[in-house]
Length: 191
Image (tube, rainbow, N blue to C red; front, side):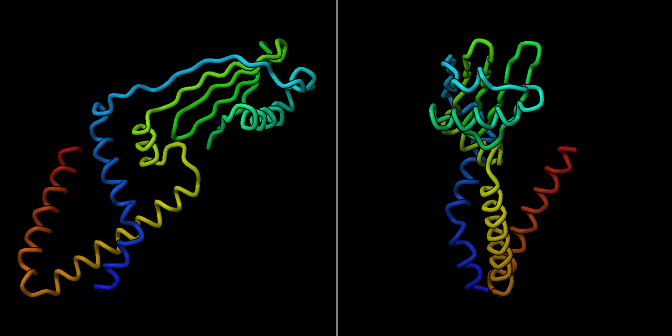
């Protein structure tokens, strides 16, 4: 159990610190005094945009092509995105989200221009979004799940090591009981 206790914590030690520190800042969002950076720019659309046809049925393919162009030419990318077509205004709309912020892209087909409205969050706000897995990739979700398993093994093996130690058993059970009672009481008060 001692080996399990030690080696279950080592791979996830940095993640435990990360979740603990960002958890405190999630509880106190007013501590982050930095402002998000907003920028609105208009750029000339790629030449293929005006010549593209059949927007109503192919707007998603055109949107994916525009996403590739934005990534290559303007370093704009996201982990989650949505593509919409406004037939009345002949406007292709891309909503791009990532833990670091969000971007709204409006491609005006008839005017051959792309309007980019970008909101970049502060580093602390971005880390809080990563803590909540907001707009993160699947890789982060797998890493979070793996760290949760490591933390569970760490806690259970630590509890077992204290329970089998005769000198530490009574104080450990008293602290465990007190902490558990406080946790249950707070949960009860929240309902």
